[in-house]
Image (tube, rainbow, N blue to C red; front, side):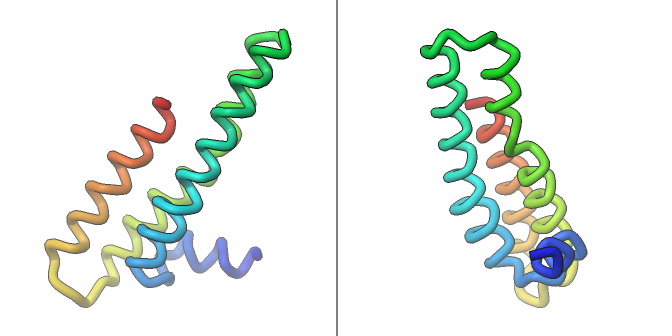
Length: 100
């Protein structure tokens, strides 16, 4: 697991994997789960700070995904438009995921 995280952080993962799998697929799923858990905490009558903490739990993973895509885009050998699109896309994804 540590090796996988290290490869992502250094941008050694293929750009498509970093963007589509790690950010869009897994990241969105993690954010949906944490948002649901935060709502459940509110419904259960827990203090608001607990709900906020639950909602923010995926933040380190989101940062990892943004850095991974950004650095993988630097190494990408294909058309520059795909690297630029992935960078823009991951930033938009991160903003939307944390704003949900």
